[in-house]
Image 1 (cartoon, rainbow, N blue to C red):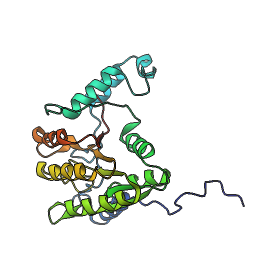
Image 2: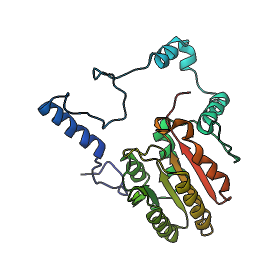
Image 3: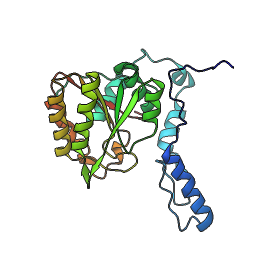
Image 4: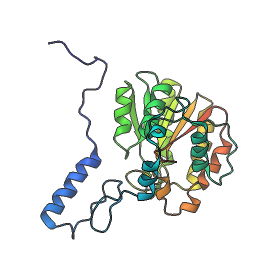
Length: 257
């Protein structure tokens, strides 16, 4: 029998641990009742009656637009200029970033992650991710015929900078380039947010490592607006002003602007 998919692909079934936990939570609710179980496994907003919340301010505004406006193409593949400007303003807000930058519209945050992997890594190279992470990072790397190597996220209650450094050095030694994902602030699924000092340590290390080859940090900020201290949620971004020319930062998010 002929095979319908390419040979060079990982055939291991993909399991998303989040959805496994969803099923466990639903089973517990069925046995013990929803008054005794709080299902906080999926990043969705529900009201006090357990119904999914759809914000009228979002959907009514969208539905008020002329259908031809919603159906028309953007002015370019990278998104309309006014959209890209608003995205940048939302990301940086009142930080003092002084970096050359560009904004590209993609099919959601997933499209941004996938495009990054495809454009940065060659087949067979390695993507670096935290050992606790959104399962689709690995899926996207697999589709691109790339490998995955994980760093331990925590050292006690803090970001494990030692494991991050060791993992990046190993990958750099093998392939002469590093693409590492950091999901911060409000890491999925732990909710952890790195401190400014932890980010300073990351940037100092990346500057050092870049003497051996290009270093690309993908900061997944999908949950930044759920930060405990929203007014200070972007303070860490000022650390990026210290990056040298061999280090690139990519912000990735889902948003409606």
